[in-house]
Length: 301
Image 1: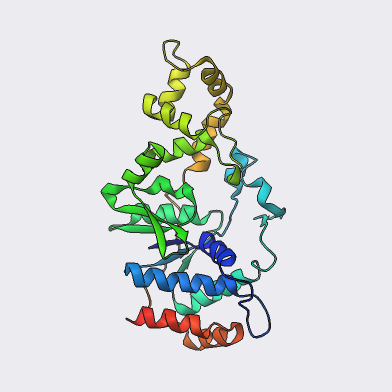
Image 2 (image 1 turned 90 degrees about the vertical axis):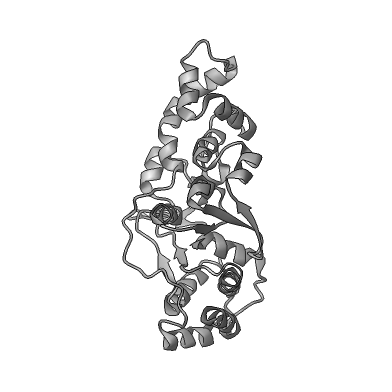
């Protein structure tokens, strides 16, 4: 089980009232919510291994170099040495280091790599997996990893993690008309305002799906632009032709990396805390005793 950790703690932050606070009054709603999410996921799905994948760099420079608008609207402050500071709710940002400390004390693997997003860590771990993989994320970008043959699916939270949309190839074909491998082409043609991806003007999701159905993949669509016999409309041909520069680089930006050099780590779910004294201190300081008790009971089963 691979967690898109930031996606989940953002959901926890907005789903749990900020009246959930530590003894000193500091909001800990994202911390508490994430711990409860993990407890529920372990209870419901019984993973052998669990990795909290981490955004060591939420906006890698190599992606920005290719598409400067990539996540640009989410930059709160530019940092010359990088990475830039992401716009985050005032009471969420201080909770992220607490989340990291609690996961580390528990012994739950937390893996991030400088210069890469959590998506890239997830992509690399998925590609290397020898058994089934469940990816827990509220980010549709990771639909590209869905692969029935390898038993890779995305579990997309609808309401917390007690109600998860099971995303497999049948679901993708029904919803978007593509399988996992075709989702990258669909996403880059359609664009994604939330990630600052412009897409091809005038080509929305339905048109992109129809073009992929007709021409197979992005390369097939671009070959059709150069083929006067193809059945592209004049406006489609014109817009795709004018978007060649974007189409040439967008696959590298949209596709998650599969070859990140990962540090050594133990993905096995811990039966007991790795650093119990540290965890006790964190629990007392941040008022997490009940949430951690529930999680530890679940891990010990």
